[in-house]
Amino acid sequence: MRHIIQSHQDLPLALQKASIIALTKTGDQVRTQVAKQVDDLLQACSISREEFTGQLKVTVSKRMVYDSSPRILKRFLPALARVYYSAGKVDKFEFRGTGMDRVGTITIQKLLDPKITLINALSLSFRKLDVGEDSESFSLFVSPEEPRRAAYTIQPLRLTETTTEGWRNAIINPEDEWWRPWKITISVQEDRGYYIRRLNKYELSAIEKRIPEEKRYGWREGLVRARYYPKGLFPVVCHVEDGAEVVDSLPRFGIDLSRDVKTTCT
Picture 1 (tube, rainbow, N blue to C red):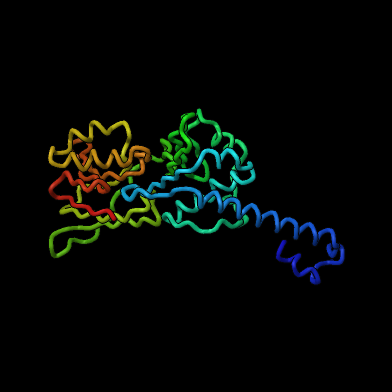
Picture 2 (picture 1 turned 60 degrees about the vertical axis):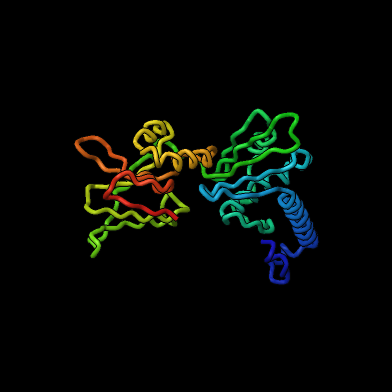
């Protein structure tokens, strides 16, 4: 409508009113000012990305956040969401006319409440740290939301024909599935009904017991780097043998537990 009104000669006579044109120009000016203030707040942040998980860490001054108006803060979290979805690239904030332009008042109240450390918005989780009274800043860890219980389903592998090297392959496309942003290649020597599922945060100790001692460092190091990352976003390759599940591989951790299974995760 704003673009239409800019060409007001094409409007019906009932809408060719100076008050409507003036109101639209005022609205554009306000939007430009809001976008600039959001950009200023974004530029004042220290933003880094954890390569292992893709999680975003944003450190921002408490004073700047608490001094910002609700109108600015409602666009601040969407601006961070765009940085996350663009793999860490910081662009100027602009209004797109979609639900990604702003969050609600309740979400902003949670952001400003030091007692609340986890905010879910825009299909992402914003985890607050360093929110003590003596701290001049706090950090937001941005990642996808923790999957709901109903999402813990299995995905059977679709294997290719056996190669000349004696392996059958399955390639997981990161653009279509929940394990994004990783591309996973799984090679097996025979089809035993392999499937991929989510890692359950309650099985970490049981999984570690299955990992040989020489490979546990990579497992533990990965868990440290993923301390604030939903464990349900990590894929696990398994099959069932004699009625019991066998864990064959933890692709993102670079750990293959079965001799006839090998994986890569990029």
